[in-house]
Structures are given as structure tokens and as C-alpha cells.
Image 1 (cartoon, rainbow over the protein chains, first blue to last red):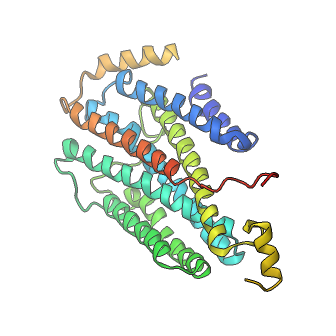
Image 2: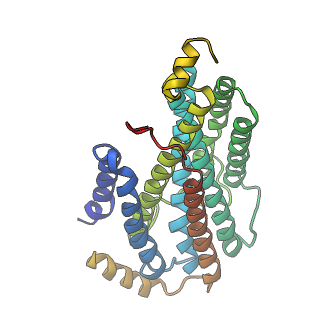
Length: 254
Length: 59
């Protein structure tokens, strides 16, 4: 029953909102995110017990871990879109790649910053060149470079192709981040997940994670619309032109 | 849900307050940064929203 209410049910609702109810996702996702975030962070801050070693500082986990997970999901979407664009060029995949990179960078930056704050009371330093932290920093730099490239290249087709290549190269770092704590047992603990945390921490961790995923999906949807609007304006697709301008163009006036 | 609350209270009694004492300042700073960053990004998306609304049949 516990697993059903905390893991299965919110996940099923989120999937339904993103698939069957995607037409209304811009309205339902904020409501879903606010409810799950309110319960997740509320329980995490005020109800969940302190950790045996880290005490109350452990409560940072309910924001840090979901932020990093959401970043990785968004950046995997960016990788998929980058590969898809090279095989089948489309402004939709290019716009989705741009949107997912920006949202992934946002959540990644929040995750790294919170990890740094968490590190001070537990390790004694805000930053150390631990493999997990180093690979996470490389991720931030790589996707800042990706977004900078998109900003500096004016030709939309060249920009889409070049950024797809950069997106694929940057994604090499993602599995290294994930497995770094297993490959090099260093200062950073192993992944905090329902499998590695106490059952008392699982409700806030799961609900906060679903809330962050919903927010990431919502942000990507809105950022995708902005990107598509920019693409249409840039390439002046025939269907984006006003009717009279299209007629003039056909007649060779323009 | 009530069993979880009971479980949390029992666990809290067993572990005490943890080896690291205090640290609520770090916790609130983290949550403040998180909520602030998400709110600001949502605001930036709203400010950047496409201005050209779909052309209606009358236009």
C-alpha cells in the first residue's frame, strides 16, 4: 500500500498527464507539481526524521537529488533529439533539443549548488575535486557551451547541425556522472534512491522527484514553444508568412 | 499515510538528532535557492513567451 501511494500512483498520474491529457498539460502539470512539491518538501522538512549521521542537514536531499535526476532526464532528451536531428532534420527536434538543454542546465546548476551547500557541513568544504563533483561541473560547462554555440551561430541549419554534434559529445559525460560514485568510491556517497535510503525518507524523496519531473516537463513544453516561434520567424516558413506577403513572394515582388 | 507518520516518529526517536548538530541554515538556504531559481525561470519563460498570437479568421 505504501509503495502504491508513494511510487506507483503519482507516477501513473504524471504519465497520464503527459500522454492522454497532454492537451491540457500546461494547466494540469503546475497543479500536480505544486501538490506533490508541497507534500514532498513539507514532509521532508517537518516530518521525516533526521539522518543518523547527517542529522537535519540530510533534508537537503529532497531538493538536491530530484534536481539532479530531472537534469539528467532533460539532458538525455537533448541527446535523443540531437541524434534524431542528424538522421532526420526537423525544427521540432531542434527546438526540443534547445529547450531540454536549457531546462537540464537549470536543474543541473541547482543540483550542483545544493550539493556544494550540503558538502560544507558534511565534508567540511563547499567544493572538492571528487569524481562526482568534477563530472557534474564538466556537465555544466559543456551545456553552457552548447547554449552559447546556439546563441552565436546565426544560420539556423548550421546551428542545429553543429549543436546536435555538441549535444552528442556532451552527453558522453552523463553516464560517467551516474556511475562515478560506483566506479571511483570517493567522498560522494552512492546515489540516494529508494533502494539506498531508509523507508522513512522515501515518501518525501519520491514525491519531490515527481514534482521536479513535472516542473521540468512543464518548463520544456513552454521553452519548446518559444524555440519553435523563434525558428518560424528565422526561417520564415511559408505557413508562418501572412497571406498577402506569401502572394507577393510567389509573384516575385519580394 | 498515517503509518508513514508513525514510522517517521518512531525512527526519529531511535536516531536522536544525528551526529551533525544543527545545520538548519544550510537547509533553508538550499530550499530558498531551489524555490527561487524555479520561480525566476518560470517568470523568464513567461516574459519570453511568443508575442505573435495565432492569426484569427477575421484578420
